[in-house]
Length: 447
Image (cartoon, rainbow, N blue to C red; front, side, top):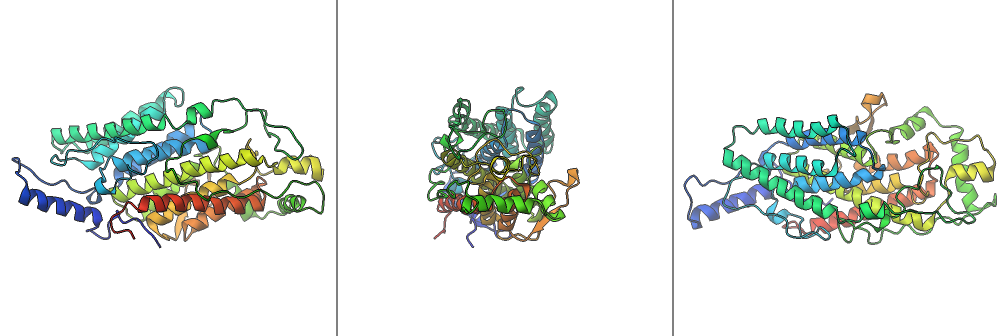
């Protein structure tokens, strides 16, 4: 199983070794200034600063307005990248792989930095960029400043020049990442009007509100080749013939909906995600729980945060691209109009976008590939995201089992046909694999 090599094995990993080499070179071959010393590597610090920011982000994103469910993949992804690059990963940076980004700020190799302080400044800055008074109320906006200031108090023992330098570097990374994010097409593409085509067997909006993210598939990916070989193939051809494969897939869902077990209903509600922390937020919550369970250090936590966010972001782009190509009709429409049961309803409201492929399956399987690359088969891991709502927690041994559970939940919810879920799981896995392969090639020693 491929795992990223920048994360330390024991107390002396690749990152630590890099710093030891730098120390030897500088002490033997450099003219040292008075007081010269080598920074502690990020792997020597706890992930506390990442953990606290993830907690706040998951909470305030739940309250934010103006974003669709999948839209939260963007700020999570760019925040994770900002955190990772603000620990100055050096040779292990992914800066040459980000699509359309160049000229990231760099540290002074002969100056000391406090990496948690840099991460803190970076995450505060990029969250202020993504969220304004239009998105958050005054309390949540103030919470960003409050957390930044509270964490800064913990760095009070650091020298003033070191702390100032670290804060400036972290903010400069965040500003560069945010400026890059603003050119990804999201704002422009998702403000364009869209009129759904009308025709036999085509998707019919399930809400009077505007269709969700019809042009999302045009957005720039974070990793340019993340969509290679991710096409799910055409769905089962539409038909209203009771003997057809299309009718059968709808009827399978319809009949199953009448005899759902308690666990199947719980599964559907557990992965509903909206209203709540959103689907990307749910996966970031799982990421946070994996960081805690694995006792990850700062570098691994930042890397896992960035990697999972990138997988989520690019998978969302992929799945919405295909949804508006195939325009597959939703179960509620077919069951009402063709099977002839106008009283039937899914477990919760059907999202107002086309059915194929299943987004939950697509996004979840991509995230699972990123998390597997970061942590391996971590299990058993118990997901407590919805404890505050009283939902029973769910436990799995691998992240791929989580993704399978998430995908299949949409069948029990009455939202997606099983073939759409299967296609989403397969294509999302391809997106995650592409990202992991692309980024891992930049790790020293990777063959």
